[in-house]
Image 1 (cartoon, rainbow, N blue to C red):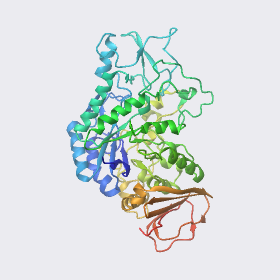
Image 2 (image 1 turned 90 degrees about the horizontal axis):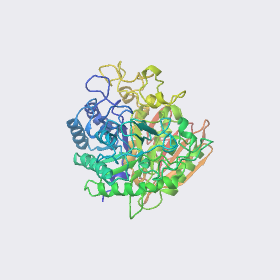
Image 3 (image 1 turned 30 degrees about the vertical axis):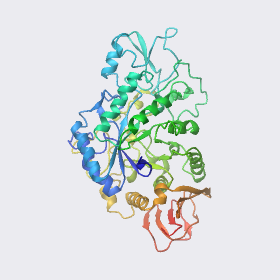
Image 4 (image 1 turned 90 degrees about the vertical axis):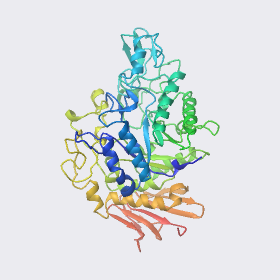
Length: 535
C-alpha cells in the first residue's frame, strides 16, 4: 500500500485566521480555497491540515464539536468543503482534517440524550459516575483548571470532562460509541479527505477503575509548558491507558480498507516517556497511528547539544519497521516559533524542520516569522486564558490572522479581524517577502524546493549526527545519494565542516542556492546544505 505520507510536508491552517472571504472578520472555507495556490505553487507544501470547522458553540474554538458531519455556518457549508477538497486535489494538494474523538460539545445531540435519563439508549455513551464522599468520583483535574468532573442535576450524576465542562468525554469502551465515531471517519473519507489529525489521541482510554492520580509536588514532567493546577498531579490514570491501543488499531483497520491510503496523525503529549509515546505506532500485527506527532522540539532549548540529544532519542525509538519520525516547531497551542527561538535562528529552525529525517509540519505564518502577539485581555478569545486564575495560559497570541499584504487588515479581511494583527505587518507579510530575495519566506521556499528535488532529504537515513561548539551537524543518506547539513546556533563564528558543493546557504540575512564560493567560517545563524555525492 502507498506510503505517500512519509515524504510529504504538512501545513496547518487555522480556519479562524487564514483568510476571510465574506468580510465578517473570521476566516472561512472559501477564503482557504482562494489561498490554496499560495500553499502549493508559491510555498510548495504537499498537505493542508485543517483545524476544526465543524458545527460548534465555540466554547473551545471548535474543539467542542456539536455535529461532526456538518460545517459551522461561520466557516461555510458542506458544499464549501467539497469545493475546497476538489480544488486542493486539482492543485496536487492533499487534505487532512481534524478528528476530535475524546469528547463532544455538551450541545451535541448524543450528550443531550445521554444526560436526559440513565435509561436512554445513549445513557452509556459518556463517562458518568456517582460521587464519592459528597464530591466528585475521584481527584482528576481538567487541563483547563479545576475538577474534571461536573455534576448534572438532570441525571443526578457526575460526568467526566478532561477539558472544559462544555466538552464531556465520550466512553470509548462502549462499542456503539466506537462505531459512531468511525462512521464520522467514513463520512469525511467519502467526501474525499486524505486523512485525519486525531486530537488528544492518548486521552480516549482512561483507567476503568477511576483510581486517583498520585500527587506531583515538583510539577515537572507533566507537560512541555506551564499548565497551572494540572501540573500538581501525575496523570497516570486519566489518560494513556493501554486499552487505547486497541481502539487506535481498530481505527487503523477501518481507514486502511480505503484504496486512497489515508493517513492518521495523532496528537500524543508523552514526551517525558518516548517509549510510551512510540507505542502509538502500534506493532506490525496491529498498526495504529502512521505518525504520532513529536512535540519534543517545542521544549528543548534551541541549542546544538540539546537538539542533537533529542534527535538521537527520536531516532532510537523510531528505528523499528513501520515507524517514521515527525517534527513540529509550532501549532495553534504554542507560542510562535519566532518568539521562542529568536530572529537570528529562524532560518536554522526552518532548515532543521525540513532536513531532519521524518515528516515535518509547518504552522501557518511561521514561514513569514509572524510574532507572538500580546492580545489585550478585553480582546482575548481563548477559554484557557480566562479560566485559570492569575495566569494567562491563553493561546490567542499564536492564532492571529495571516498577513497577506501591508494593507489595513493585512489582506485577511475586508472587515475587522476577530483578533488583532499585531506589530510589523508592513514587512511580515507574504507580498513584501515575495519581493525580497533574502526574506524568510524565500528561505522556506528554497528549502522546500530542495527537499522536493533531493531524495536523501525526503526519505534518507540520518547519519553522523553530532554537536560541537554550538554547531549541529548531520548527514542524510539515500543509497549513494548523501547530503550534509550544518548549522551554527551560537553567538560566535566557527570553522565550517563543509565547503562545497553547496546546495543551499542560509544566513540571518541571505538566501543563496548553489553559491560559487563560501566563507571558511560558519557565521552565527548560518546553515549550509551540501551535496556529498554529486547529486
